[in-house]
Length: 139
Image (cartoon, rainbow, N blue to C red; front, side, top):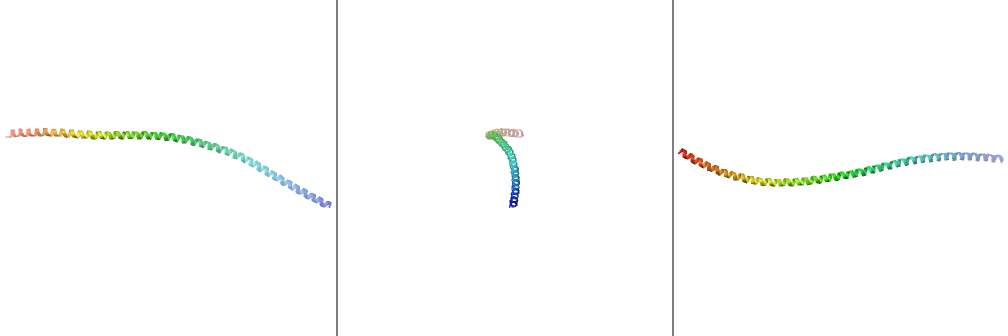
């Protein structure tokens, strides 16, 4: 019985040493995993901070570009409005010039026709005088 108990004690001691070894191994694994998780959290935190900084920088760039785009759009709108008003003004001036041209063309045609009729009358009178003088000379 004593031997049996001693064997059982030895078996239990061996089991206990095995359990301690398993416990120690599990403790080392857990410690390693914990250290790995802490390290990964630090890396993730740094990465998250960098990503947040980049996102903030992109937001600032987006706001700057949007504001810049709005300013350029407003300048383009002002330029377009100016060109539109210039176009309308020049169109009106051109139409007015066309009206004046037509009026002066009509007046010039009238004067030309008046001068032509007057010159035709004078020419006809001269032709008659010349014909009369020719008849006098050749008779």
